[in-house]
Length: 302
Image (cartoon, rainbow, N blue to C red; front, top):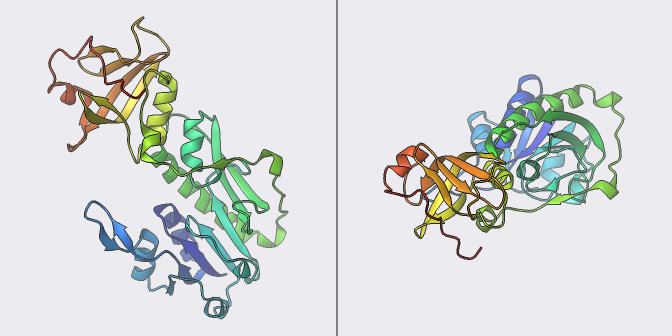
């Protein structure tokens, strides 16, 4: 098939690479170059980089006449990051289809992967839907489930990108024989964009299990607390439902790991990134502190 691909994110890469094997990608529509990384250097996104290296026709905006002239059979959308104009939704022979990393109608919107982890769901997955004017509301063409364990959002994003790529391939190969299913609007839920403040750990308000999920969900931006006025990002942790009998924020252990009492349960911190420093194990971090056990982390504003 002749395919127009809409995508801008690393999540899109497994899919565009898979489509390029047996189909013809006649154009790639992606977001313009933006400042990236610590130096904020203007750079193309991962999809644009791939498309340029494979001599694909790249569009940074959506000129209807130019796109329609490509005579594509189908449009495929994955982590594009922009609203597609309504006038373009029906132009290919088989319309536009979208790969979304959740079990729709649950978790429409920007952060379905993080939200599934944060909510402690037992399973998540991918849905392939028709693109409609209303966000993530199109009829469902295919679904594939994935059982959740202790993945963080970066790991889960990679898994669902690979799983979703194969699901889209299956949909395209069977496009003539599909039976779309309308989404149940009464079960629709929406996710929000994540702000840095959302990743703050509150030992006095949150249970160890919730903090553990928060750390895994927000690993890309870094869940954090303060110790002696310094921000400490937690990159890896575990938890236990047991309680020390001490107040929240109390440092129960500070030897090979950093164990902190929460509102309910103990949080075992294994890997951290102090502000302005490199990632390190909790043991390496604790080498810089003396007699930290039996003290408290900063609990201000909790």
